Length: 295
Ligand SMILES: Nc1ncnc2c1ncn2[C@@H]1O[C@H](COP(=O)(O)OP(=O)(O)OP(=O)(O)O)[C@@H](O)[C@H]1O
Image (tube, rainbow, N blue to C red; front, side):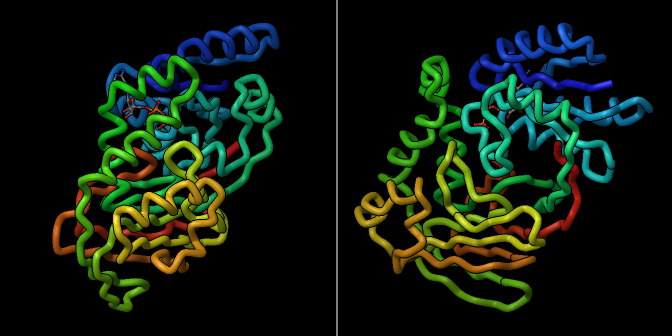
């Protein structure tokens, strides 16, 4: 039996429409399934725990965006049940990184084919994440985007990822960089005037921004990107290059690999994981190798 979890709020309501089409395909193919619709934030994690008690579970399938995937993996970690995804969010960056088709019928075909890949996940302050933790400027952009009205309007027009760009430009005008004490695999390093730290298990966030172009979710390492000591105007100038991952060539951008990081900062820095707000610095982040099975 396939168990689907649908977040009707993903993609500002697009997920429910997509689910109806998926259900039709499943019925035409005579495939056994069950479905639950989330009733509140974090409900998906609770639903996963209930599904895991059953003994006929072929896969748990998210119909939603990165936030829904985030909640599902936080219920699923420790189980061997594979995760499938029908992308229906605004950004769908986990699917982008896994090369899961963004079209619902092709994504369903992939799930039904049954090929599995075991991937690493990240661990931050008692939460797991599948894609990227973004700290500082990124955290503020995620917070603003999740609260914004323009996300809803743009989702209706099928341009959900544009809402991230709009909020990058808004936050750029007021964000103040800060000094950071980093411990990278236990080695202490100080950084001045840090705008953002992205800790990536997968290359994309914010609807297709390729912040860590070489991040791989099966190499047991994070790719880390630090942007520091750059003026607001220079940052604005290099911003478009992030869509092709070309920002890595700029002198204000540092990229390295790590298994474990500890981050302390002079001013608190907001952190998101998979686009969901997780907390503030101080933070401890670790890779959890070969932890999740994905269809
Ligand atoms: N019934 C519900 N009512 C309100 N919010 C919900 C409900 N069910 C889930 N949520 C919340 O919806 C939020 C957004 O979900 P999701 O990230 O899947 O969509 P998205 O933001 O449109 O896509 P993406 O993250 O890919 O940009 C999550 O934070 C989740 O907690």
